[in-house]
Length: 390
Figure (cartoon, rainbow, N blue to C red):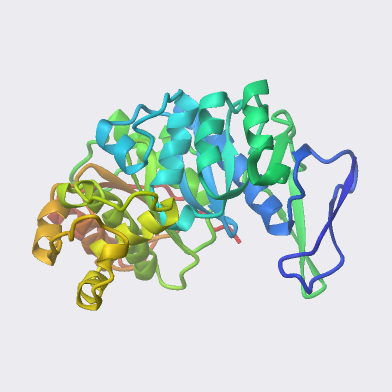
């Protein structure tokens, strides 16, 4: 099949809509469901991301995509007991692929709500059982076990989007798209993100552990498929904060840093000890945690609506307590898809535990950025490569 008709494009008023190949067949098969225009954009971008993550890390990989940017991306490292608890997978069996998906889905649960999932390997039963519990639009993978298919086909009353990608498909070297009737053409971004890109360390601190290199590569690969401008924080094999599509570099750094902070705050004793009312939905629980961490919790207390969420009224998690907990986070890697123009980005990154950075370099203020890194003993590599994606 070289063409598939879609219900509509990005919006319901954009008709007709289809995906097609100029020559040859589409490189994927829709096993179940009727994916839409944005679903397929997320699926195909997500597949490229996880395929590269697996190659770079040598581990199964997963991504959670929303609106053509990843909300989460990770490789299949084992989960600590704390991460199992905050990802709500402490009562299930986990395989390496399931670990990757739990990490990708769990890092930013609010952004991942209603996502499209990408898996680097055959979807197994353990991963399908995790997907079954979450609100998502669909999944793309190179294969599915019989047990996994049975589980996924029952989701959404049999309408869940299940896509099988041809893992051997190689796209043409030249890609095209149209904007306002004008055709744009460029060579595909086939840059291989590897250790060599991290060899030009420009700071006084020249030390990059193997774990740091792995996390920096994960950050850069994630940025390669994130709408620019973009910045990505990574720790222990998973993206913990992604700032996408901002016009200002510092706003990317702040947005991603705030997400990374929320991820870390969810592991604080004050959050882990929250007692929710019986039967609360996952999305309501996630929203409640977000409110509890934010300034809005004071309003919830004042309005007396906390009883709808918590069995016992939680004490306020003060800003001083939050800062003390955030200061315990360290060994975070940071990637940027273009150069940092000012040292303020480094100042913000330091607040979220960043100790290693990879960015292209090339700003007229590189000396200021390097000096700020040196002030905090941060190791920074200049890759010389920009990773814009639009």
